[in-house]
Length: 134
Image (cartoon, rainbow, N blue to C red; front, side, top):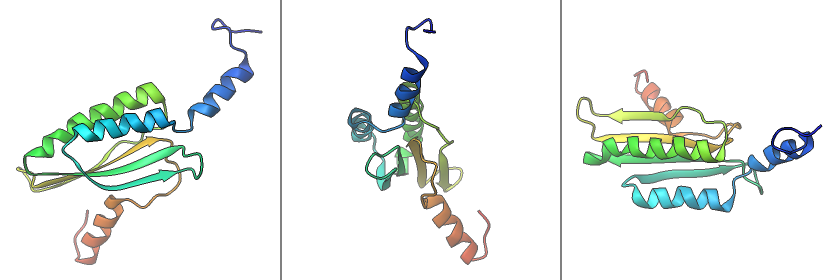
């Protein structure tokens, strides 16, 4: 029986399957947003092998650019509204309170379900090594 949109169940399942893979256009959209951002890219990792399903991005903002991370989070939210995926909350570390010297942020685009080492884990490990808690 056809649904109100006219697609059969199998077509919907296949559309969902194809949507889990990052497209070249969706990755170019991320690149264009990064070109506008003052963030320094500290790491970028695709997951999913030959047909990537997700992308983890580590960004750093120094000095007066710290508040810009809010603009990049807004882009990340809008990207997920358009392209889907399984967004996990951004991981953010702020160095210097109340006036941040450095803001580090990690964003996952698409489906990043497998364990990918992150800068948050690295920083937490360094703090534990000197006897501090993250």
